Length: 438
Figure 1 (cartoon, rainbow, N blue to C red):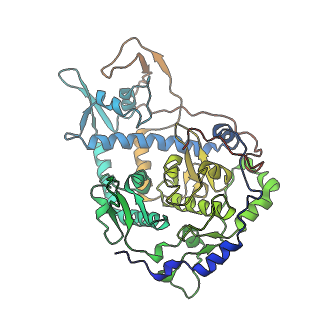
Figure 2: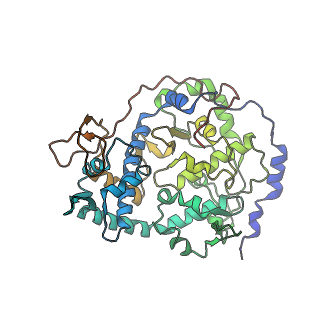
Figure 3: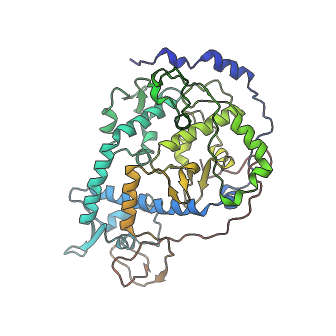
């Protein structure tokens, strides 16, 4: 039985009065122009965050391969079998997985058996590092449980499909056994349910925690009402501004749009933990609450960054707009969208100073240690033709080998000039082309 307190009524009288006074008409709003995301994003590129994207793309590939090896009985796997996972590690042909592994000799070992089959295993350093990773995950799993609970508290029906939450496993610092074991460790917080016969599993909130219904912005601004304890806190209307951080080439943004930015910052909005069913999609209040939800979600993550298509999975549950990418790009002082790679990423800009995360969690520090063993520097790769094929079934392209066995894993970084800031945000109310994003 759910045990939600009466305070979850969220002060309906005050909120309903506010909703009736809200202007739901499509008045002049901040909108992007009808251009492709890729074209518009180049006009506000932040090279420091693009570099951060590249670094953590490499880390995610390495972590995926290590987790894959750990599931093998002998912690070894034929390199040929890894070819089935090219999509997961974004390593298309003609790049060879064997070459990718050779670039990280501190983590992966390659050897041939008597039949000439090339195998991959973990080095002793990698095994020690993964033991440390398990320890860090265990030490911080209570915090991860809080974030999962708060995600459920923000959802419309206080339940979310388990498969959707699984997309956030690494982002929230959840263990590999998230679905099979971890979700059952906190029965006082949530439980797995099957509301229908289609075998779709949901994670459902068991009890409401008022202390967790306080947004990260409220915590930073210490906005708990005097005389009201955190256990008595009821989410409702907020008027707190979002921290803004524009890159240096955005100096003219305030002179052009300072008034509209101030109007947005001063506008009252509904807490992500309050009932949002009465908000009209497309209204100013609806959009600002969506910004607050995305700000809260990004605050939960290890890197303060998420893949954007993971966010789109939660549009209905978290009452967010269909054109979510447009909203992210529109509020470029709060979020930064990186287009690097096949999947876009969104950063919480206030969390970064240059390419460095300001507040680093234990899990983030572990990822930095992992990256130091990869030897990432961001230099360009060079390829040369080779008529021979290797055991992986290659296609005649090899990476140039260095004299050192510990050659850095180098990734091509596209260095394009950042164009002067023009008006990609507020020119008109037309829709942008988001084909291929959602």
